[in-house]
Image (cartoon, rainbow, N blue to C red):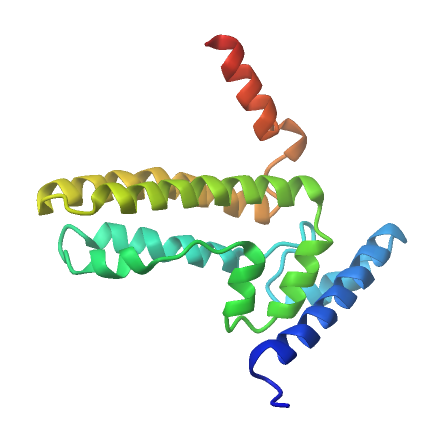
Amino acid sequence: MEFGVGAPFMQYQDCAIEVQADEMEAAAQAGLADLFAPKLAGANINPQTGLATDYLNHFNEAIMLLEMVGSCPECLTDFSRWQPMSYREHFIESHFKGRDLAIAAYAGADPAARACLDYLATTMTTVIETTRVSIAGLPAPAASELAGRAAAWLKPLVARAGAVINGEIDLSQIDAPQTIADRLMRRA
């Protein structure tokens, strides 16, 4: 058996992450979350929310490529290779020093913060994937214009996701996605 590569390693890694997540959740319920705060902060994970801004690098990469399309049309090739990743998938694939802790902390993170971040990530992914499909085959000027608009739409979403991760948003004031959808349907 080869350790460090392939399914056997991932199985053990997933088990270790689950144990860390269980420990963090138990600590939070016991009021011991402050004990984990230095460990989280040392790994660049917000101790208040249990989330890491490193995840936003995944979306910032797509934004950077979109912004470069006007001056470097070859960037469309790289943009077309961008693949959506969940928070957990991003950290599994990353070289982030606290990746296992980031995954475990996410599992024990404030459910409202996690749901808000997931909603924003889904929205950003939808914008990126829709842009990728729409931009294919467009002439260079139109591709550049669409890429610029998409980047402009994504930047505030990334900023809002960063605010959620950093605990700068009062999550009790944010409507759940279903509430928003219900409100929009009543207006229709």
